[in-house]
Amino acid sequence: MRPLQISADTALKLSKALGVPMEQLMHMPQHILLKKLAELAQPEAESSAAADNHASTENPK
Image (cartoon, rainbow, N blue to C red):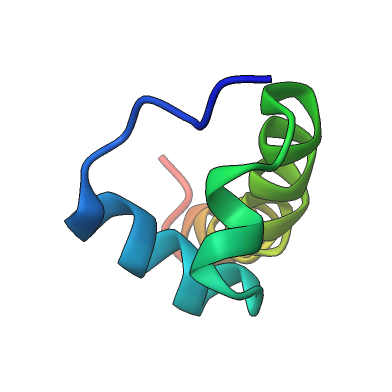
């Protein structure tokens, strides 16, 4: 298996965000990495959707 084709800067940011060592991240299968990124982004999407809902109920058109 080839290491991921990402820059060192991107690898460092992903490593910190996912809480995994950079060496492990570089050899992580791409489908596992994508799943972890989706899990990481899900709470952010839910919180922004909740904020949008709250804003739309305060200012009905």
